[in-house]
Image (spheres, rainbow, N blue to C red):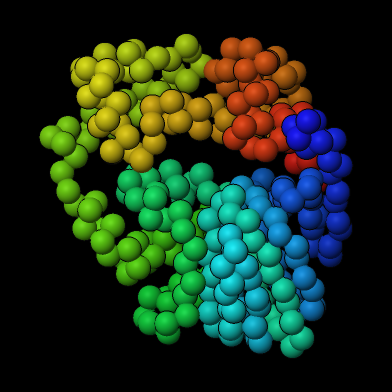
Length: 301
């Protein structure tokens, strides 16, 4: 019954001067300028955004006054010059008070979270970062955010790629200065497994995702037993074999849904899901909507 109610929840779109905000229930589907996956929202208007979540990373940089957030039940008062970084799929609300101004940075995380050293520390990165200590690292993050906003506003050539360049630098700062224990853990050896072998296995998956890949197939390619390869792959990448393959197929499907008019059957086959039923089920589990809804939302706006 709850699943039926979720399917019947209407999609709502609100138009703003610089884009759309698309909601279905409490789920927001972040929209982006053409051929990009990065957006900056500026606001100095008092307003309350009710609890919602989305697949994007959200970063608030307060310019004036205070922006009040609640993330997974924890309150934050983000004051002038402070930043709050919210990982994907974390329930949050925000309240813009009088005489406040902020930038909201929203971006899809696959490019950043695909970096191997970030994958290894995903458990540590999947937390809220509240940067308010005035440290050199805090100021560096603020500087990088303003540089990204400047490129976004000027619409420079290759602005999307340039903005992600600054975001990658921000995550490097976070890892170096705020995740010390995780950084030390990262230096531990990977169980004697040559990391180049795991990298080669990842490349094999990226080239053969359309096939009926099994853990045994890729373990044999890597030259390890099923159990040893599975354990080493998770330790090296931060993902289970199944999750990594699924993530790859979902990414391919998302691109096909947005950039082509291929049928759902063709998208399912070309992204490696084999059947439309499996494709629909897995896509909904991972993205919170059906492939048809995803295409309608992102294809329209």
